[in-house]
Image (cartoon, rainbow over all chains, first blue to last red):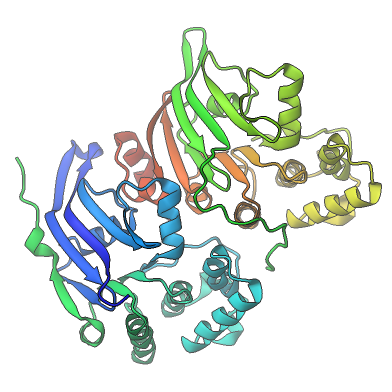
Length: 236
Length: 271
């Protein structure tokens, strides 16, 4: 699998049109090309507002690109997520494409352990194995055992973020998007996440990440990508 | 909360046959348009959310595609067990009612529209099983108790009349009544509207489990975008009887394209 391209972004363009602000057109990027191979971790660089998260979301498919293609290696072929039918995109997200956002958004009143098990169950892993794997990763991220049966709503920011990380890393996604996964973590937990990322890379995953923390960036990046180089020109 | 044990059917990851197909569905009331030219396909295990403000035609559309209201134009095909994709309005009245009773569910916004108010909560939940020809009292009672438990209803009140329950409890009885006979497609009109938020969360979790485990397909009309985000795979946004935007739920809510959807999303209060 080594050397296989997992993400291929081709001529991507994104601008927003705000209809309720006089149809204001907000350009973000254009003519953007990027490809990421197995075992690579591309870190998106650039100042705040340059479009790093917009690029990330355009890859995940919750932002709709204005033009171009985002191809992801799914079940042996490159699938363009900008034209994939909904059920296929959901299947890609279930099995191939993981996304760690900065915030945990889940159904309330569900225990932490059940939340972490959910992506495994969605992939047909049997309940006992799902439970074992979930406990293992929660333990690894040092989330106190007393918390496992509680819904994460009342947890601290760092604890919620670790639940979020556990939900993604409990599966071995071949492609992962990491949007500041270490933003509210202390040094020890940051190191644990760095270890998880490096383990995923050595298993052959392809990663795209945004990290404002320089230590994390240096520890995981195999290359940097300047989003600003593809900044869209203002059109009158 | 323990996972709910349900019959496991294989995940159908690339469904090739829709369970419901609507083509150019239009409903007019005299000169007034309820909904116009709505087309979509729904696959087993999919949850489709229909959002929009009141008066946008959501409920009219739901009534048409569930076979309860004859459209002025267009057709609605449902994959019946016996005959495959069949236009609901080509069926005889009796056959259409049989399909609705045995293979579909419909959860009304107002529980009083979906319940028999003169028989007990337990009888309300057991009735769909009897309609399927089930005559074994013990197994029907067992299924009824299972479902009342799943919707967190006090089992000591199984023999009480629905009118003696609060609105939220009535809604939970109605949901149990519409899921007990293992339908393949359930229509829901603002199902969590009258529920307090803790019960709403429990129901959302229950519905997600059902969808994953049994390939249940759901079409849910809601004005609550938070409910839509947690439950629906796809959204259809309606305004003035027309579908103005469709897409994956998080794409529609995170990057709305149409002016009306942008307004709708930006108007949500944050908590």
